[in-house]
Length: 549
Image (tube, rainbow, N blue to C red; front, side, top):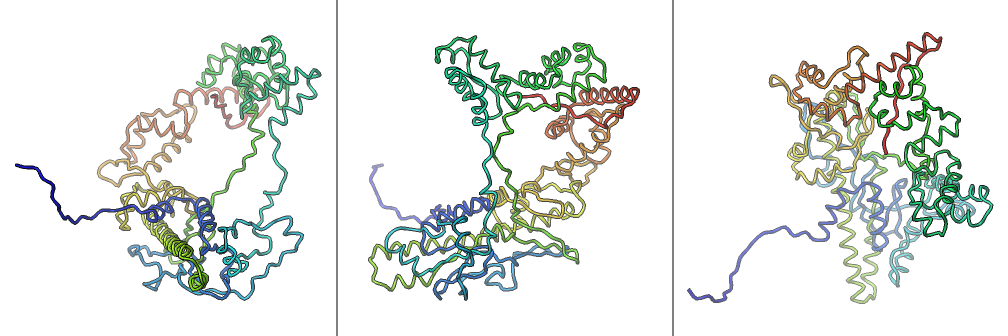
C-alpha cells in the first residue's frame, strides 16, 4: 500500500479553557478578601468599572445608565422541611430579586460631608479612582464625577493609626547600649542579636562568629551570658531546657530538684512522674508544685513582641430559622462586592471622535466588565445553592448539635444541585457559615462515614470524635478507658469502629494515651491528698506543659 497525504474533514467537540472562563472558575474559590483585592485590580485596569460602597444603595454617573452586578441586603433563599430545595431564587424567573442587573441608578447628592481637617488625617483611597493613563483616564474622571461616597467616618479603622508594636530587635539593642561599655563589645552583641529567631532563641554558631569577628570563643560566650540576662528572661537561649533554666534563675527558683527536672524534659513529655520523683527525690505534692512552676514559664519569649493581629472571620452565609420551622439562608452583604458598569460613559466615548485603537480598547473593557459582572452573579448563586443543600442535609446538626452531624461528601451535594464535584469543592474552600451554633467552615459539614452495627444509619467521623471526647472527659482515677474499652463502648451505641481509628482520632484531638492519663490522674490525686493534710485546697485539675520544639 502506497503512503500519500490526503485531506480529511472531521467534526469534534472539545472544551476550551478561555481566559474569561478560567477567570470565572478562579472567582469561585477566592475568599471575600481576595475577591476584593481582585476587583480593585480590575477597576484600576478598566475605566468602565466602578465599585459601589457597601453602605450606599445608588451612585450617579452623570445621569447615565449603569449595569450593576452585586447582591442586595435582602437576598436570601428559603426551603421548607417537607419540600425539596429548588433552584428558584426569586419569584421572577428571568432575574433574581437579590441581583440587580441592567437597571438605571441615580443619586440626588454626591457631596461629601467630611471636615477638611479630617480628610487630611484620613485621606480617601486614591486607588479607587486611579485607573489608566492618557486621555481616556481624564475623560473617565470628568464624566464619572466623584464616583465614590464617604459617609460619616465609618469606613475608617482606628487600629490603622495606633502606635506600632515594640520590635524585639529594637528592644534588645536598647539594652545593649546600657549593658556594654566598650564599642567592640556592643558590635559583637549586635551581631549576636541578629542571630536570634522570632521566638527568641539564639541560632548562631559561636565558633564561626569568633572566627569571622576576630574574637575568641570564650569572649563571645561571656558576652552571650550577659545577653541571656536581658528582659524578658529566656532570650538568647539555645534550646528549650536553657530557656526554662534562664527564667527559673531570674525568679530565683532554680533549685537542685528543679535542675534535675529541666535535664529530664523527655520524661516530663511522657508524663513519667514516677521516674521524675525518684530522680528529683521529691514527693507527689512537690512534683506537682514543680510542674505548676514550669507552667508559669514562657517557652517562646520572643513571641511577646509579635506584631501580628488576629483577623476576625466574616461569614459568607448566614442561616436563621423562621418561626414556622423553615430555614432562611442569606448571603452576607458585607462579603458581596457591588460592581457597576458605566454604559453611559461607554456610549459617549464610542460616539466621539476616537481612534480605532481606543475603540478596540473600550470594546475589550466592556466585554471584560460584563463578564466580571456575570461571574460575580454566578458565584453568588452557586454559593447560595451549595449552602442551601448543606443546610438541608445537616438540619439535625443545626437543631441538636454535633452528635447529630451526618456523613456527607462533595459528590452528594454536587448530585443534589446538579453541579460538578470540583465546583462544589471550590465553593466550599475558605467559605464560612454563621449559624446559631457558631461560625463553621463549609468544609466542616463534610465528614467521612463510620459504619454502624445491624444495618443502622452511618455515623459521621466528627460526631464519633465527639463521642470519644465525652467518654474520656468522664473518666475517673480508678476507671481510665483504654482504646479497646472505648471501642466496646462505642459498639454498644451501634458505632462499628476499629481500635486504630480510635487512636487516630484521640491523637488528632491531642489526647494522651490511657497510660499517660492514668499517671496524670494519680499524681493529681496524690497532690490533692497532700494539700488536704497540709490544710490547703487542691485545684480540680492541673494541666501539664506540652514539651516540644
